[in-house]
Amino acid sequence: MAKSEVLVLNEVARIGLDRFPADRYAISREATSPDAILVRSYDLHKHAFSDNLKAVGRAGAGVNNIPVADLSKRGIPVFNAPGANANAVKELVLAGMLMGARNLGSALEFVRGLDATQPETLDKRIESGKKAFAGTELPGQTLGVIGLGKIGSLVADAAIRLGMNVLGYDPEITVDAAWSLPAQVRRASSIDEVLKNSQFVTLHVPLVAKTRNLVNEKNLDLLPEGAVLLNFARNGIVEEAAVLKGLESGRLHAYVTDFPTAGLIGAKGVTALPHLGASTREAEDNCAVMVVDQLVDYLENGTIRNAVNFPDAAMHRESPFRLAIANANAPDMLAQISHGVGSCGINIHNMLNKSKGEMAYTLVDVDSEVPASTLDALRRIPGVLAVRYLPLQR
Image 1 (tube, one colour):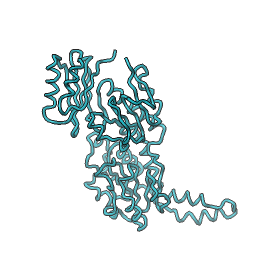
Image 2 (cartoon, helix red, strand yellow):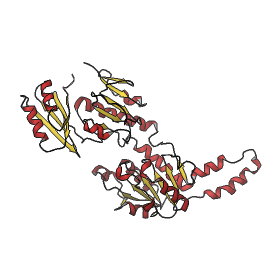
Image 3 (cartoon, one colour):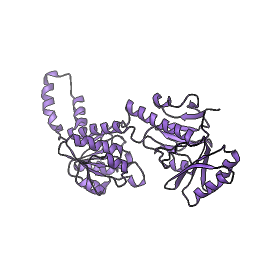
Image 4 (cartoon, helix red, strand yellow):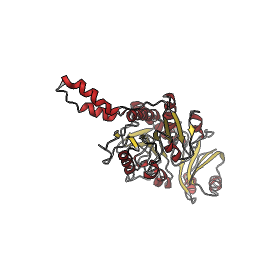
């Protein structure tokens, strides 16, 4: 049996790639007709996808580099690894808070600029210069957390342990996230409420149309004088011109971001890091392992976990013969699929149907082998986007 080809377009941790069973998968950097594509930051928006493509995996959380909508129209799920890098980002946010509170960025620049060729006056210059970098301590301060997913929850918990008060806002918080949120977190009813009442604000939301410029000139003025804004989510979530204006006026004491731009580099009060959020060995390993396991389970069993454009769908196999069908979330689709299978003389043993927005997904275990003619008949049903036959590999 031919191996499934996986096109890998970035450096992905070997511990993850090794989870592709070698007897069933071929890893390639040049495959032209892969079954799956695995990326980190590689931009797929102009990539030519083959008709053989079945899945895309992102060894990380954000999927802005992937044309999700276009792939959805072809019935192709896009998997990511939410939470796999959460601890790495949490630790960097804590470092960013301390950098903002204690003026560490400018203090380091001050020390680097000292003339070491005059050691006899060095101590005096250090003592006189350090006054400009006096900071504030974190206990008793309020941290506003906008976005209470895995990262936001971890940041909130860490801040509480540091003695901070935490005010959180997330209108789309999931049940699992709500359960993991520390009880001490006070829930805000709006972003404005968070900004008005927080000396530190950290952002942990995805970049989508409604979160672009989420913090802007209008609402940034709600911050208390001398606040610290942290952005380790995505660059477009904060309106850059508003931040620079806030720093100039003193409304903002510091802006700590993981996304340098030409306008931010060198600006007073800005500490810009080179997108280090997930850049730890542990995070890269975790992301690779998580997304590879998801890809393998999907390719072999049709199971979907953590696809940004498909519903989660997992069904225990009760037959060696399985169909996996991606279709539009429209009336009568399930009946048409059932009829299409039954009309070919094939008995349905078990069935699972899930939906998410405009996308639906159906797993069907049947009692006998499925001929190509049945697959073709199912593909002809209006609204069916992709059909795969997944006989159990022995």
